[in-house]
Image (cartoon, rainbow, N blue to C red; front, side):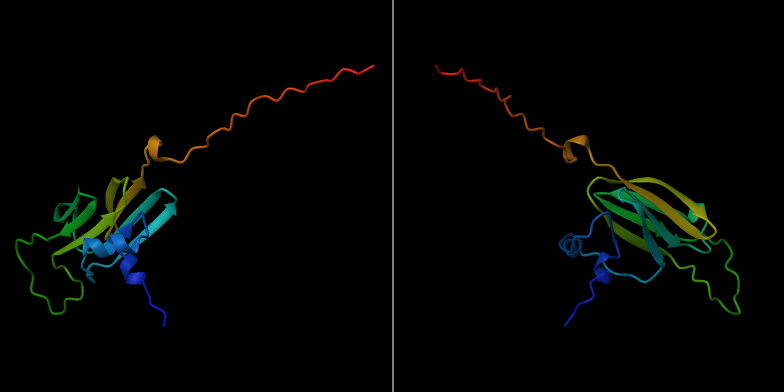
Length: 146
């Protein structure tokens, strides 16, 4: 029997450790839909479908390694819909960030909220090469015995 672990990795950015996600107890929600992209080893982008939300309706916060995106529309006068197919309900979406992952910026473009992330590993934590210093070997030349 093969298990599909894809749902466990949906809300993590920057690491693929199953145990960390299970410990966080993040609840899986279906709204709004989102993508997590990795452009290279240290750069990520979370894209959330935020149709109908403006910049003033959205909030982004990072606390204790958790990225929280909230949305709540402030409609002064609610129109009467004959059909409402675009959901505009309030939401809160949380993403567990890996160690050393920082939010670098966010922009709202064509109904999509893009949040750029970068893993910034301190020099002390990066792997480094250790040179091997072997003593110089001296060749001993023997003299001819007579």
